[in-house]
Image 1 (tube, rainbow, N blue to C red):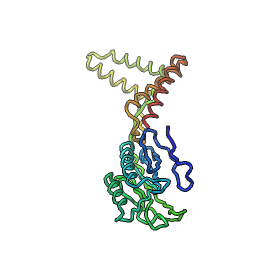
Image 2 (image 1 turned 60 degrees about the vertical axis):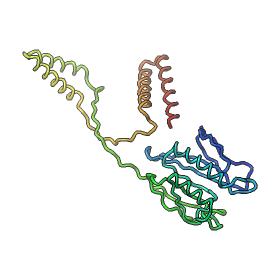
Image 3 (image 1 turned 90 degrees about the vertical axis):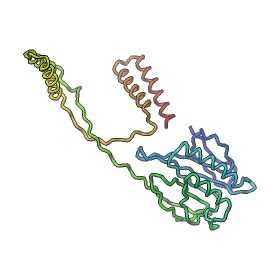
Image 4 (image 1 turned 180 degrees about the vertical axis):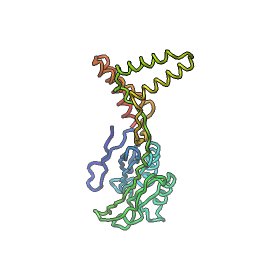
Length: 284
């Protein structure tokens, strides 16, 4: 579930409409925001936060000090719930003016959270840098320098690339046997021959040794050990051991129902599947 943030009936100011998680119960008056979670290759994930802070005006009489206080609470919640955060948008703060009090206060705030500002050129036709890109220093991907490539309205358009390196593929050898393809009649005949041979043994120790050796040879003959090279996949962070156990129960219940086709087994399977889906939805 998500909610939309959009300021209505104000044609003079741009607005943001984005999906955000409903558990952010912050009351924010000084800016609008949108939050998106991005997952790449099922392993590398990051969160994009879009910010728009309207400038102080008669229609929006909220000063920068209020914005800094609200943004501090907001970014604290973001960093608790998300990792690899990328914050960007129109902050309407003169970042390039090192004597500007609002810039100094906002810079101190972002620095305290380990955020680095990447825009180092003019972003507005007035000659100031007010559109910012903030990232964590330890992000696992490379953020290239943004470039002012084309003027749109009174702001510039920025292009930048996020270089997300795909983790190296880890190979592992998997061993298995095709036990379901065993010819039961032939195996039964071979087991009888093995039993007849073992009856000639005089010592119990030799009998046990030959019995284990004979069973191993029969298994290799009827269901040879197969080796396969497979790529090892990292388990998603949300997929806990409890979810894996529940997933196995769902599969067992499904097999039981497909074999019996009884209403009781179908009800058990449906109940477990619904429970698993709900827990996965909450975990993600």
